[in-house]
Image 1: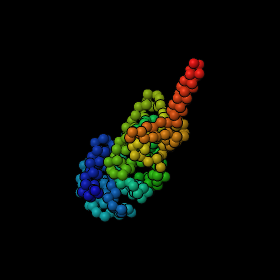
Image 2: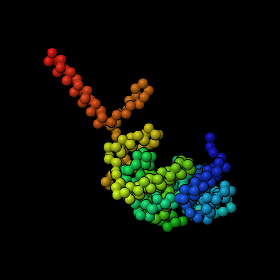
Image 3: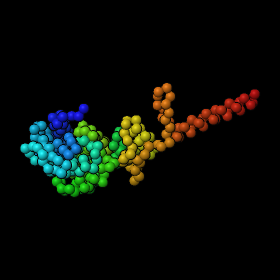
Image 4: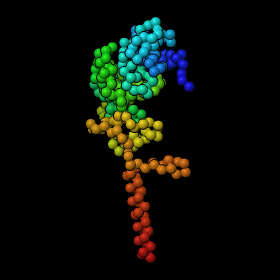
Length: 274
C-alpha cells in the first residue's frame, strides 16, 4: 500500500527533527526530500531550521525544480536531490546534513573507504569523497553523479554528507551509520592504529550480503592497500540439508576433504597391518 502525501510529509518532519536533535545541522542547514510521484518531489524549504519545520511548510517541485505547491521556496540544493532521482529510479528519498565526524573527514579530504568494520563492509561497502562544488550550483550534483551507480552514502568535500535510500528512513539510517563509522574511525586514528581487515575475511563478509537480501551487482567494495575488494568468495559452496543452509568456503572444504582422505588411508593401513 502506497503512502499518502500526508504521511510522506509527516515522515520528512520526523527525519528533520531527528537530524536536528542529533546535532547534524545548525541554523538552516541541511535538506530532506521524498519522491512522491514519477515527476513530483516533496522537499524542505530554504531558510528554515529543520528542528522546527511543520508539514504545511514543505514544498512540492517537479523533476526540473519548478515549484508546484507551497508558500515558501524550495531548498537551493534541491538540484542535488533531483539529480539523484534522475540517475537512480529505485531511490525514493535523499538526506543531506553536516554530521560533525563525517563532515570532519570531508573537510580533511579523507574518504571512508577502508575495510575496517563488518557492518559497513556488508551494508555500504565504502563511502567516497566527492570533489568540492559551490553550494546551490550544479557543481555538487555533477561531482556526485559518477559515484551514484555504486554508492548510497557520500562525503561532500568541505561541505557535509549525502545519503540516499528507497525511503526516507533508509536514507536517514545510512547517514546514522556513516556518522558512527566516522566517529569510530577517528578514535582509532587517535589511538594510533587503524586495523584493516584482511582480504579473505572481507570476501567472506561480502558473501554474506546475499543472506541479508543485498545485491552485489553495483556493490562498491572497500579498500585494502589501494585495491578495492568488490566480490565475495565465489567458490563458497552452499547446500540444503534438512531445510538448513550450510555455507563452506573452498579452503575449509579442502581441509575437510584432506582430513577425510587421511583418515581413510590411515584406516586402510591399519587393516593391512592386520
